[in-house]
Image (tube, rainbow, N blue to C red; front, top):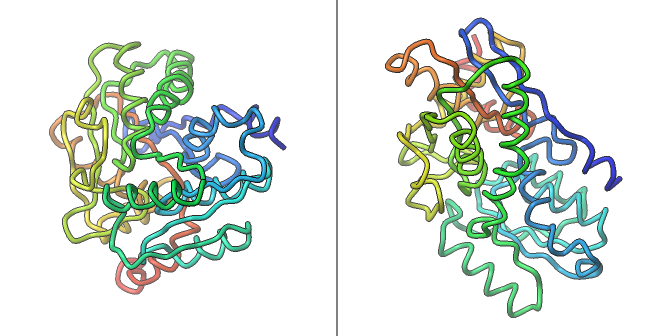
Length: 293
């Protein structure tokens, strides 16, 4: 199973012809969490895969996909996982975590911020557990630079294209930072758009910069705020124009792309779609009577 995971890549890079020279990286092809967080978790676990993990506890705060990936890998590598999550954890995600055997600690908080993850770190220290701390661990952006970014560069070179605008969600800051740095090192000037939830909105998988996100300030040229309803509209628009069933953070990325295209014009775009729709059906269903007409 570990060989399957390590030899699974690359994930597809697909052109959305109906929107121009727009390319999307479909990270829901990752095999465990069906999200880009499979990559992140493998980068964070590298230093422990020499036998230090077996039988140990890992404590980690997560809004969903990191938790699923860790819960799955716990069954492969023989460690135990305790997921610290907010009250907005989608019900489907909680069911998946429990099926995989994770302990789920639901904390009465709206979002994961620096206070939250530092508290989880202290809990891990008191219990002798490992805390990977995806929010500050430099292996997060470095892994996406070395692996995800390098993969994207090879894919663009294979089709003779040069991306000029990157649009990606702001979560931990890992994938947008690592990919942006790699693209700029390889292709020069790339305009980077970060996507965050609008004030008062909670969108699983992305966070507002003031939540304590690291690294992103070093790479983004512009930040676009998207509401939860707009993200749902983005999910529907992608589905009805391409047939792809993408998740809420992907819907937010798509909506941000539509906005910046009005100013930046028809250049070559790269959009990162982190996961698919299926964990968020319960959230999307709240909007569907009005929007799914």
